[in-house]
Image (cartoon, rainbow, N blue to C red; front, side, top):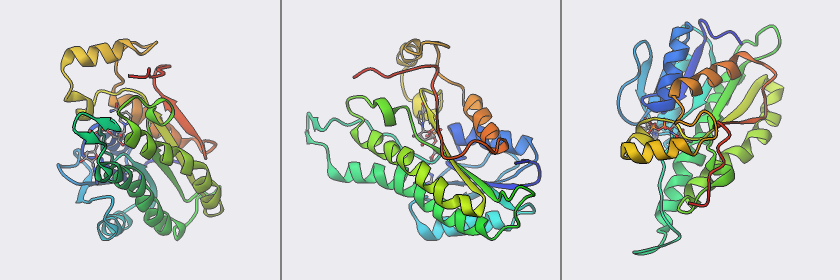
Length: 247
Ligand SMILES: NC(=O)c1ccc[n+]([C@@H]2O[C@H](COP(=O)([O-])OP(=O)(O)OC[C@H]3O[C@@H](n4cnc5c(N)ncnc54)[C@H](O)[C@@H]3O)[C@@H](O)[C@H]2O)c1
């Protein structure tokens, strides 16, 4: 798919991986609508205050995207939250509300955006190959080797991994591809809360390159997935060969 002059909806595009992806798409001539809870969109993108778990808000963001000059041709789902909480913590069992909240934002929120954006993209004029759209989700290495304290986060990202293929199979008839990137450790505000020494130590756990990923490297893969029509129904780890240890 050619990116220039098409419209893309980027959730969580006000920060980190979504922010870098928004910037990369804008640089390639796309119209980008950022759906995020807080903050602002990178220069050149339109910001719509959106909670991905709120159906009306997502429907509005999709409408705004559909009104941009180019056809709505893709979604990059980057909105997400991270919690670290043991099942049996110092102050008692893992609160169920916390578990449900993480599933609601990371898994149900991703699905909410996919279903509403797919409904809009289905009505678009297809390209010469029959392609109408592409969806890029964000899971995590934690979907495969989640650490202690990541039960909720790993479950939510495992759900994103698991729904990738059934979604791709179903939406294929409309010419809409569905893919997922599973990042390892990237230097974003989500990671930035850690002390520098902790970040460096995390980076050293990556076989090669032994550092945290740069958000532009995630954006580069998102751009490639959009451009490469054969990538469909697949989850791609982007992690420098990192396999996380138990803790
Ligand atoms: N940074 C990493 O190392 C890493 C690793 C693996 C996976 N991920 C995943 O990548 C995605 C992006 O993370 P990031 O590192 O850029 O973090 P980030 O905190 O910089 O960005 C996340 C964005 O999502 C937005 N958001 C959160 N809840 C939302 C909601 N309910 N509705 C709309 N927007 C919401 C936030 O406002 C923020 O702008 C997340 O899904 C995260 O789980 C990150």
